[in-house]
Length: 357
Image (cartoon, rainbow, N blue to C red; front, side, top):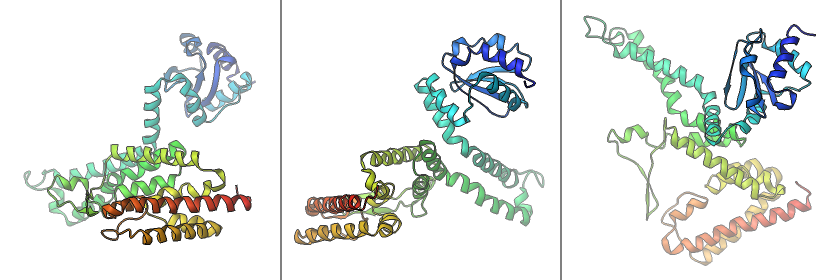
């Protein structure tokens, strides 16, 4: 028996027994329990156990503070209880049964932003240090800053702006990545989406209030402002969750035989960026590329026969309809359906014959 066997046995009894434990894990200093009925835990008696330093409930988990020796305590506890421990992520998942809707939302948000905290803290410290050296007039009788007096510190200030600005300027990239990671979807798509939101082609959102001229995409009958979402949290979250549910939707409706083709490349492909699907999947398997060429050829022939015309060379994919002349939008939509349906059907048929699942 281990050093903490007696205390571990007592803790097992006081949390309601083995039957009341849905999951158990530990962190650096605490035992983490997911209890089927938290009311069965005798908190006062638990905190009276010699090895226990305290307890609290957070995010649906009943946590018992043991200290630096928690690993040894945990080993004795699992040996006595016969319960196989789980990872912290599995414990968090099991803890959702003890959370209401609001608590689940707050837990999800916390898990999304937790990986970003070190970068945000670093960026904040850097910007704070810059404020000290370039904004505090504490030299020469309160008339000069350190940057004004020293070329070295002026260079340091200028260099640190690169790092400090990058943290917050690129924040949407981290948010979109973290959302896709948390929701179990393609993380690379999240990164690409975040980079799109802060693209250098888009006017910095903070420059709008400064009176900068806003560039536009001109589709002939409609103009769209080219404004980015640098350092924006809410738009990045909305975009990230939209991407997640789009990917899950496509995975749900797509047959397994072509799932590898449609997801995730279909999202970028339908928005006009076909290279991920073309070079990443179609050319690799050969026959999807040929099927796509056949469908595109038929759609192109239909567009020519119906005299479909555009105002200019615009975006590709589904948004391409915005660049068409109004009288050609209907025929263009039909051509798009042909370009989607024909390769889809051909790929399914040939894929099944090749036993690709």
